Image (tube, rainbow, N blue to C red; front, top):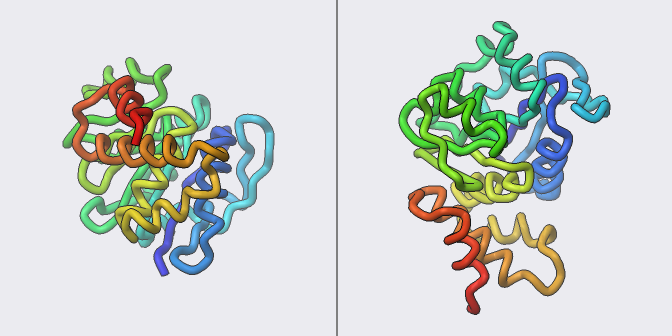
Length: 216
């Protein structure tokens, strides 16, 4: 059974955690998902207190490590030396991803040095200021490191991780229950195209939407 962890901190973005947790938590046979933090519970940006399942150091032994976001929370996490020093991640053996401003944590850990990334549109210029090429795509992958931009792009981030571990059919199974009624063909094509273009970025979001909405 694979081990997947989601890293949170105080003032994390609610939807970033809840969407990833809900998608991953529905499967009880192929992987185990845990929420990690620096203390027993962290407060979200909207004030919810969320209990953690373990310390962030457990991320170093996980198969998949996903960093949540938060406009205020990420800055606080990066400023916390104990938080940053706890990670000893290996992109050669682990899948590592972030949602929105979680990309700044990956950048601080040196995980975005080799290629382009994405982030929340409002944070694009700030990430570019760090010398990182930022693409206007919902998901960008460089090897085993992936960044997602915009809360709903968590669907693509999870899809990428599940497909990398178990294949396309398992990814479709994991995301099937989220798709609106009557739109399965549209969403499946959108998800498939977004993941494919994330691995070999070449098209903008408009091109992705055009291809996804083209009749099957």
